[in-house]
Length: 502
Image (cartoon, rainbow, N blue to C red):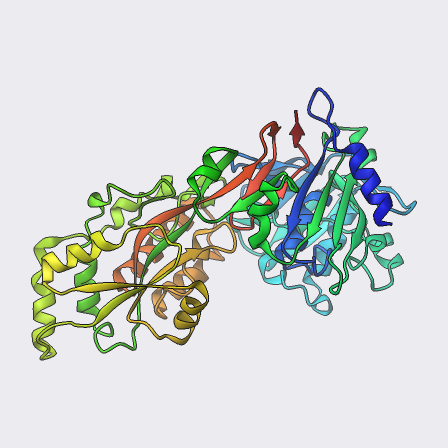
């Protein structure tokens, strides 16, 4: 089987004059756990599902939501009914002989599985707003909601909203999504081969162009070849060795980035996390005093991958296709106010403390930002010295987990594209923030949701348990001559269906 696959790859890796016909190469950090969209949770599974299934809608490369398996959709005036008209030229295909046309009934069955208690789908809560889903005819799908929900269309971009062919599902007899012959695809590609042995190093997944769908609408790549590495840290070397065509780079290497085609995505934030078990930092006024003295306008010598941050939520985060930071300026969240420097001395006096001593900021090795300007601002304002303690990543992780730090530089990185994904771990058990997050599930308008996000972000920052400092970039790097790959930050998935290689 391996010889056959290698022969296929060597014969199809070249591309035609219009960029079509190429087999893209990429690494997967882990073996997919389950290619059943209604159950899959891990990143590797979602990557394969996104390339092999066609959901109703999807995010475009510019962050807008666009129709995919749906030809069009409409929403009732009361926001309770969503009607989708499906394209009639999408087909199911797998490695066996079974084929079928995609219909609205496939989506009905998928959502019935998600919402059925016996399925134990981890995504049921995501779609809890659904009251009823049914097919009006083969190509008209209707959702009825319990209450208006501003984010319902965006929820349908998730891989769990992919369709499921009931007849094929029942034919697999409990093996659906667990082997190549138990996966039926309706997207740009189908699963040609899936080889994984935890005791063997030749582990791979091969996707091949869905020829039935290609007859209806051009699918440029011939396929995608994934190597299952078990270690995402080798991606950069694999790229340099010309073993893969693209990868996600989470660090900063100016030479690597500048010498290759890439896109930059401001998808993470860095800030100072205070240990509330500390004798000093359990005192709100002391934390607040430090936040008051950080003047980000003096962050003039930052490396290219960092920029000054007043808020928690980085620039790549969108809400219904609109950049959150364009809707809510983070400059409005600034706490900088040197006129309140007396709060520090008053707090020390009340606690009968002469000075703050032996304070260090714990930082992971490899962070390329300079924190000394912040410690100098504190020293100038309050006369106390704060050191910086760089640690190897493993030791740093243990110290954060154990709470063995006074102040630590901590990265915030959302597991999905939403402002609320950046609130985890920095809320200080704020009951008002919890209430706001719960209210988001019933918000019926974008303006209402944005207002709630802004209030929650402001409350977290004003608690001063976490002081935002920087926004950081990650980079999607790809070989020259490649175009039209779509990278999704946060989920770190790559869609190859429109890719070209010239």
